[in-house]
Length: 145
Image 1 (cartoon, rainbow, N blue to C red):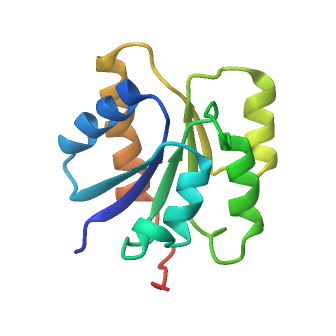
Image 2 (cartoon, rainbow, N blue to C red):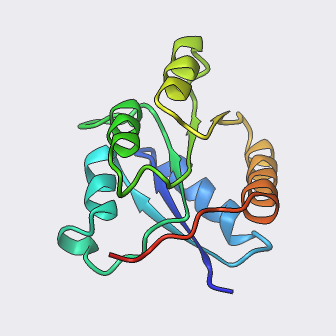
């Protein structure tokens, strides 16, 4: 079985590092790609510039609060694009604002997960995420373009 391709869209280096560490301890083979904002994520997903040879992700982990293009703006673009809308998008953010939760689901996010405060809690969220999204859920196959 090929590794699970994950695109993490987050501008916070500490959160990116923590996510990388949590997934490196994962039980399932995975490759974690990163983008620092929505603009870079779209370049990745559309295989533009330095991303011409990257694989299409099986799932996107999306922070909301980023420069240039925030997570809600990116989510709206993804779910409006027939070539990208089938990729599950999990909002993983520090925001616990009710309007962010509602807006994310209005834009067809597949899940909304507030980032835990401690590293131990974060690792537990990743283990639960991994178990649900990569063992229980059937992800849609995608074609490479």
